[in-house]
View 1: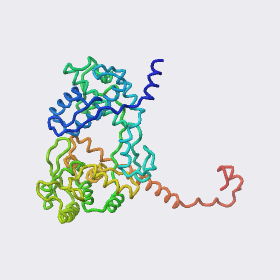
View 2: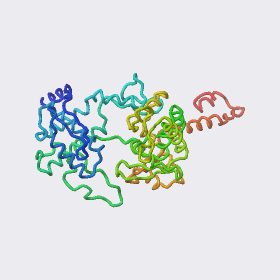
View 3: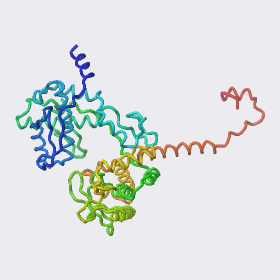
Length: 420
């Protein structure tokens, strides 16, 4: 009876819009979490300080803060303090995320990939086969949230400032022994530190943009800046944020190199690029400088097209890509350009896989190996070719010779199960 009442309460629960995650100009505290009264949540401040001391990036702080804000709002709706949360509250929170709809402000992301307004959330695109974002929280979002909250409570357990028991524990089979205690050196490491409430994430192959579709996307662009961006993304495999952070001094056309700051390690790395990318870059720069765009070695490489001049950020670049997608009726993303570059490099028989790993900035070679098998479009082409060969072979088979004279047709029909 209690479980049934709990399910009914969760089904009708609406997350209260209280508190917010605020970005500051303070490098010692780039983000702060505010509660319903507008006061800073000090336990989260201490956790953010720990993350910064562990050399986590600002983007990581923001990502963790959004999950903590969701948890704080959930506890506020049930009137539970953060240090009084029990495992029943954690279980209810995980169950709520399985059935709850995302806020309307986040569902607008389904339009970022060029989906039409009439398209239902979660439906696959007829051209690309990619599914649009659904109304509910994805499994990756729920898994990330569980990891963040378990890490948050583990930190306060170690500090002695939180509850005595972590509301988000590890799986029962993982708590009895040390992780990787019986690891075989000949086998890769498994993710043994799995949370009890962590969902199963389906494994999907990276999706690349086929060459004909990429050419159509490139032709749909209207400005040399956008063409230069796509040419760089698809030739050097850099992430969208990494390329947008480059400065004018980082472009070396004579050496066909472009310097970027890596997302994970934040190390400076010069990536080889195609000649066409630098041609489009030069065309963009000449046109932008003529109308007064900022110029200088320490200035940003990518700017908005109109005054007032502002550095091009990720959201503006994504909006550019959305417009090209809308013309074609596709839903490719900027990260698919990185997948496309990775497939082109990894499938080249003369390109060592370790070189591809260096270009992509992967920490493990196993991540780069994901691009070795054939992707969806190649498999479809192979199967279509198989059916075409079967059809051609069936047409080339000569008909069976007629039976010799002297046999009774009725006897042959009974013998072979039908008329000849």
